[in-house]
Length: 422
Ligand code: AMP
Ligand code: GLY
Image (cartoon, rainbow, N blue to C red; front, side):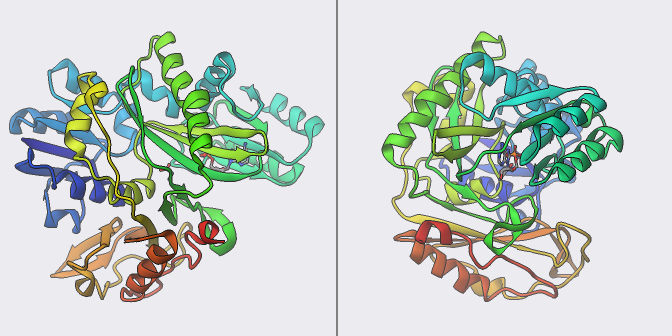
C-alpha cells in the first residue's frame, strides 16, 4: 500500500514514523516533508497548500491512502476533491472543517447543542465590539473568527489589552479577512488538556490525554507559540473526568455536526479547560495537534493505518485501539528569538548520538539539509520525545537527550511536564 502524508512539521514526522510500522505499507511519500522524514519516506517538492498538484501526484502514483497533517489543505477542500475521485483520504471535508476554520460557527454550535464552553458574544462591527468591552471590563478573551496560524487568540488581563486586541484584529486587520468577525468570551481558569478522538461520524474512539505548553518561557510566561512541548497521559484526567468529556463534549459534538448536515470524519481535537465547573471547550481543531501527535503516536500500540481506513469507510466500530502504558514527554527546541524574528541556517550537532536509542525519538520540524549538514530553517526546529515508566522518568530521559543537541541560539523550556509531577 502506498501512503502520502501532507505537511512538514514534527507532527508529520511522527505520523510518517508511525505509518511506516504498518505491515500493510510498502511506500510512503511526504509533501513536502523535511530531512528527518526523508530518512523514512520519499519527500516530494509540493507544498501542503498546493492541493491541485497534490491531487495530480496522488492520481499519478496511485496513492492508496492520503493523510493530511495541517488544517490549511482541509479548509481548502482537499478531502472533497480526493474523495470525489475515489482516492482514500483521511480528514474532514471542507464543510466539516468549519469547526476549526470559524470560531463563530464552533461557538454557536456549542451554544445550540448545549456543549460546555465559555460564555461569548459575536461582533462584526468594530464599534460594537469596543463598546461591549468598555461595559464588560477585563479579564476577557478576544478571538479572531478565522484561521490565523494559532495567533488569533488574545487573553486580555486589562480592558486596554482587550481594546488593543480588537484594534489589531478589526481595525488593522492583522489576520486579514479572518478578523471580519470577533468572538469576545468569558475568561476561564483551570488546567488545559487536549483530547483527540478518531471518528467516522458515528463511532468515536478517544485517544489518551495529552497537554500542550503554548507559551515560549517556563512557568507559562511570554507570548504564545505553535507549542513548546507536551506530555501524555495527563494525571488530572481521571477515568470519571474522561467519561464526562466523552458524554458531554465528544458525543454531542459529533452528533451536532450530523444534525447540521456536516458529518465529521477524521481526528477531532478538543482543547479543554478543566474548570471548577467541569470541562469546557476552548477550541476545536480538525486534525492532530502539534506537538500532541508526537507524544500520542509513540504511545499508540495499534497499527494506525487500519484505523484511518476504517474512519474513511465508516467502520470504526470494528476497531480496538490499544496503547502502551509508558508515559511520553516531548520538548520542542526553537531558534533563538522565536516566536518573533530569528535567524536560520545554524548548524545542528548531536543528532547522530541519539539515533537508534531505545525510547528516544527526534522528530524534525524547521530543519534543512545543506551540503551534507542539517541546519535550522524555521522557528520550531526539533521535537525530542522520550518515553518512561512514568512522566517523571520520561521527563528525565527527554532532558538527557535534549542536552546532547546544540545549535547557536537554541532555546527550549525546562519545565515541560513539571505540572504533572508536582
Ligand atoms: P485557542 O486557540 O482557542 O485554544 O486559544 C489559545 C489559548 O488561549 C488556549 O490554549 C488558552 O490558553 C487560551 N484561551 C483560549 N480561550 C480562553 C478562555 N476562554 N479563557 C482562558 N484562556 C483561554
Ligand atoms: N497544539 C495545538 C495545535 O496543534 O493547534
